[in-house]
Length: 135
Image (tube, rainbow, N blue to C red; front, side, top):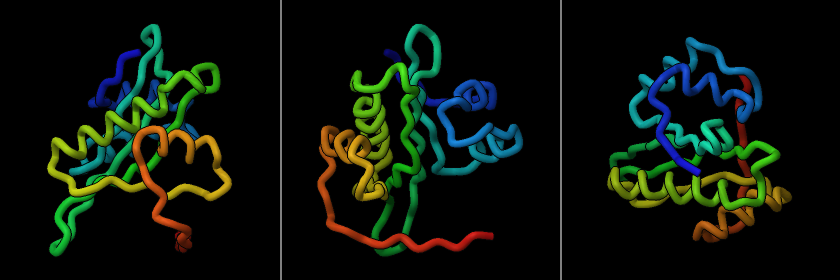
């Protein structure tokens, strides 16, 4: 397995089978141009097998932190440590950038995600509620 940071629209669209829906070229371009946005892709035999995306966020009184936005591993490659390796790779990037922490929101019944993040060293901060606005 090789993990590389995506730097081109072609890399992002080649990994679209790992997303919730198809990639749109204009959104991929915006993603790459946005400061603090990054995607790491795990490759097996030259094919995208998993991805993790992160967003570095900055606040005047806290400094910089990394949000693990999304993690996905293609079905045939699951339970091989790819999700953990991607999570650890994103954490390494966060440390390199001087982030004071990394966090992720997870549904409490998503046992696979919880196990992956815990195996990569995350700790449980307790239950919380996420609210959202749809536009």
